[in-house]
Length: 280
Length: 167
Image (cartoon, rainbow over all chains, first blue to last red; front, side, top):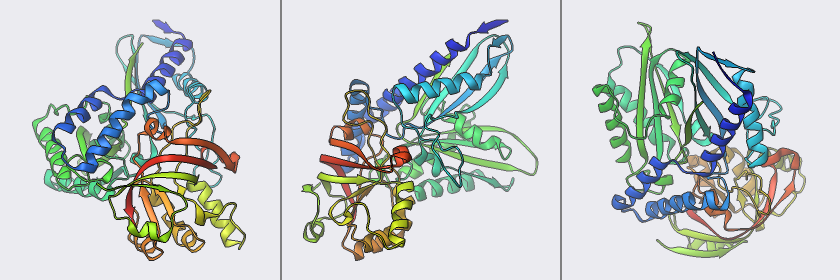
């Protein structure tokens, strides 16, 4: 057994939250620099330049990339050979509290969703998903996700006889309908299969994949390409200001499902795209 | 791209000169209000009481700032998605509001009522907080501190960049 002190986990999660709150995703930065080569719309170019300027200023001026500093989402893989001093969620929530207070980040969580909606003032709780894996490593995929893009995300239980073209149509129309609300250019995480709760988890996990990687299954890779191309022809563009770039990438993740089911979930991600991976 | 340097309050004539997709560099005093503050302001109007500030002479900025660090004027500043505030727009326009700043499309009804009142909806770019923070001259909690980021903040801005979406 390998024991990891709680202190080490808290420090690593804190460091990850700090890093992604002030530093742009390098792949996304590269994509936008390159986009200036082919985006001709004057307003869209103005917005891309402002985003790139923000990438430069945020770490230097110590101002978070976005005022919606997000809620913390963690996908944890715990090796069977690992022992912990306390439940992992407790260590993660300690780091979330520390980050809110000392960086400082915006407190964006309410304790109860419908009546009081009283702010927890600490950003806890984080949303933590735990999976058991062989070996003795602890892998944490961490994101800070804002509310705007989360609000335009959706899931639906489709008829299992649905064709891939129908799914592409549905995703494109939902994304186009959401316009500039999710803060384009966006990344789409798409979950196909699983069940009622797994499809949205797949969609969220898909956001952590390397930006613009092609799916290893050719049929899904084709769907990803179609979705990006079709949405980008519709002219919403960066922040709804027009041009060719509404979607940066679409990532599909699939899973086995019941013979009667075909769950679909799409998680939209704004251009701030704060995510990282930590291995302990 | 036409660029206008404007200072609040904006006259009907000034708003009349603007067209969608114009860029506006906005200066002056504005107030933040997002979901929770809108709910409280709407309740004041419903009771027939006076609002805590003159909304006809300022702009409402749909924004929940992040806290300022040591030695900073403000933390991260930026727009939140505006459609959530659509339900309050008719009564706020009737009470004198003319300028709103946020991000994202608004409902068809909201579009038409904003135009009926010759009011103005400006979009700011989301996710560029370090850039926008440079245009904040001062930022202080004005009302309802217990709401945290959802409190009303009074801000003075200088050449704050945004784009005309509805006018």
